[in-house]
Length: 159
Image (cartoon, rainbow, N blue to C red; front, side, top):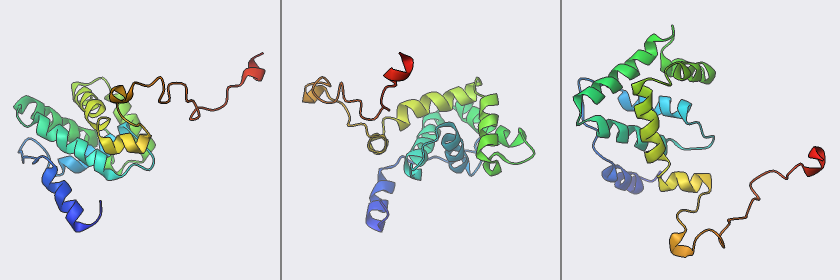
């Protein structure tokens, strides 16, 4: 949605991201960068990543401990290399995230993103997921055995 009316409607539907002294001022931008590195999808627009970042901040906003953890994690990423995380090349940024993959900070981002971002209907459309099928009789007659998205099996090579 790029026209002003659609952009205004989308903005009004988004949750208000409360300011916090425990978060850097550019927390949403930092989170978007982390999410794009951790969950890369070529051709994805910024919208799903931005909505997910805003959701994470709103989710932790009621808990000072989680808000501080998020803020410290975002700022700490910059301290892991001589270059700020936002300026790292994608491969180096991924290496940084792999180093923190088992921290509570990253666990919060991963668990929230998996549930929230992949429940986003725009993401469903981008990934080609048609949505729930129970109200349409299930998947048996709606693509259960439709494997045209997989490469042809290499049966001859394995025999």
